[in-house]
Length: 104
Image (tube, rainbow, N blue to C red):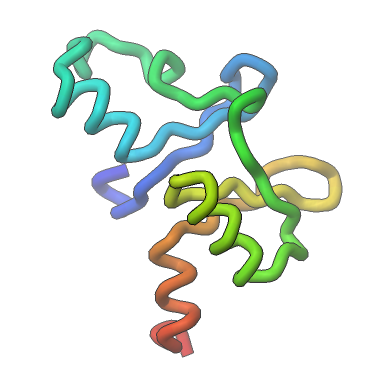
């Protein structure tokens, strides 16, 4: 995540299939609370499983994604294609860039 400057990573193999691990998961588990050793803990242990994960379809409008993220208190939202497979993640940073026109 650090090398790619990504705030999240999708994890295959979480309970129920797809999961997501975010910078916040890492920080709260290791840096803030010191609950475990990051060098010894498998990624799957800090991953939010699909049963607790909120996702959106690729056709979901940006404003709706923003509303979902604000209401849920999270900054990353997995995006699923028509076949239900992950095609990416939209982040709060992506949305801010979109509204500010930074990607144009």
